[in-house]
Length: 212
Length: 176
Image 1 (cartoon, chains in turn cyan, red):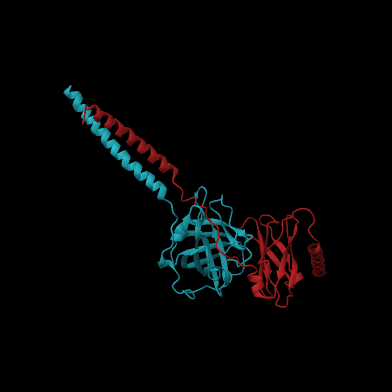
Image 2 (spheres, rainbow over the protein chains, first blue to last red):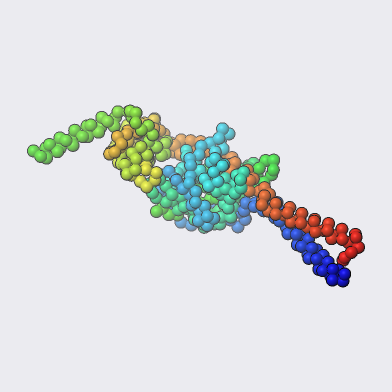
């Protein structure tokens, strides 16, 4: 009888500890499941320090359409498709179901040419993170490479990573003309609301530093 | 004599090439000649490419319509594209011009593409600049992680079962 009681106590203790562990890990799992995966956003330190001139710029490359964008520091390596404009005049986006695909504004400047070339891609789609999920984690002086159809590669260096709200979007700053070869890489960012989606865009500003 | 005949052959070939180039594409490969930028200012350099000539296919380009002369399209590593360049002459007038490329060997395809010449850089470079923000996300990365959620629910179920068992024993008075 005593034996049974002791083994019962040991059993109870085991069950009690399993219960406590299960309770704690269950709570932790549910919490992290709910809060995880928000895409990284740029810090104030990545904002433009001197918007007009930074570092050395390379001279413009001959015009050639881009085929692929690579950002080694955030493991981006994606093909590019041509993009147009939507009915409202905003930049169109690549098909959302292809998670590793970005686009460039075909009617605008080609990356490597003098002017402002524009590349855009999704931060996520219905299935989860997409091509530019980590764009907000990009830092100044990182390298962006654009492979071009003529076999050359345009190498850009990041000047700033900013996040802008959709209302009062700074069109001139993001899309405006530039006197040197520049690149903008855009994805969704800012806060997220269940009803209206992402509140703005993460925009990477870069300029051409080499062609090879 | 030999030289003369070669010269003559060359001229004849050039004439044949010229006439063929001038002839619009007939049947066969209808893929077009891509022109970048499709709108350019006088003096600008323009790149054209086509996949119509197949792998390793080069082509003879003709931009004489806009005064850019003839040029070669060389094969490239990219998707069997042949690529070439020409310069729009500074004297070019605004308008739409047909640029032609004829495959040199293999497939005898002739492809054409349009080049628009605009007088001002603003019109050429920035026909319509995008405006506003870009819709590049739906929040799919933000939803609850289904695997973690399932694991959490399972763990809580185990905890509930354990708790119930212990309470039950305690209520019966035999134990703890």
